[in-house]
Image (cartoon, rainbow, N blue to C red):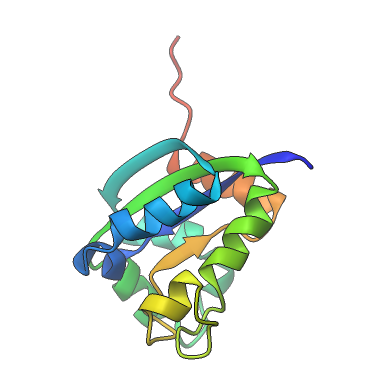
Length: 139
């Protein structure tokens, strides 16, 4: 097994519904380590960079409006095969069809307001971690 890092965003609906602790504790109970964590608001500019592959699609304006509507919590999780473990734990994108026992299956009734984002592969994890946790130049 390989130790990986992945980015998880607890989206505005998670924060508004006060589910952050519940969701974070699931990851910790699974054995994943919280390496970094911060709460902030996503700007439209950051949303366009993060969701670059979706800009220009018909659903993008609603996606941007949603992700910029309130605070998010960005988390870097680390552990054995963290990317696939987290993806399995969060469940299918649509909360209505997500399996019971997954985060979305237990707490979401929406395709759009689906509580969490998680990196889907090593390349996107590296890019997303650098985007949300840029290294500060100390020189």
